Image 1 (cartoon, rainbow, N blue to C red):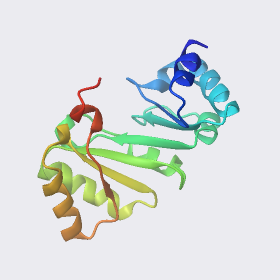
Image 2: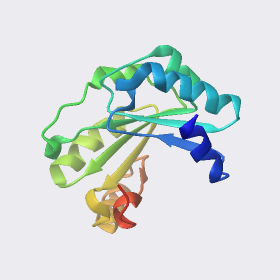
Image 3: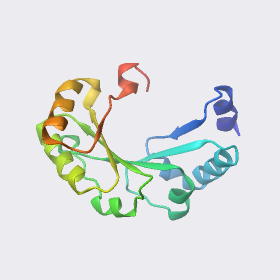
Length: 151
């Protein structure tokens, strides 16, 4: 109720649930999503793709899976991509050429939207130029929270 009250103060139409990892609080997350959907909000759920819940993923309007590129030092579960639907998306933060090459392979195989974000909001033109040169069907977006200094 506290979260819903806070959301309603802003008179927005969509809500992005992000974390840490929101799926670690699955029971409360389901309750929140149910209430948000009752109130007709568009709900986007950001996840690292380590946990899956069919009911919740069907309930939200969009699942945004954060794929970890080589520079992150982490590995993403690529089999998770098969559980995503056309309404969902994959997001990859790009720090260097190795990350870009990793993302390019994923983008060429993906049947859903792929978003590439330059790490820290820098070098967005360089990333966009590479995407255009390689004719990738992706969106290039800044990490807005980094640019406006929000955590």
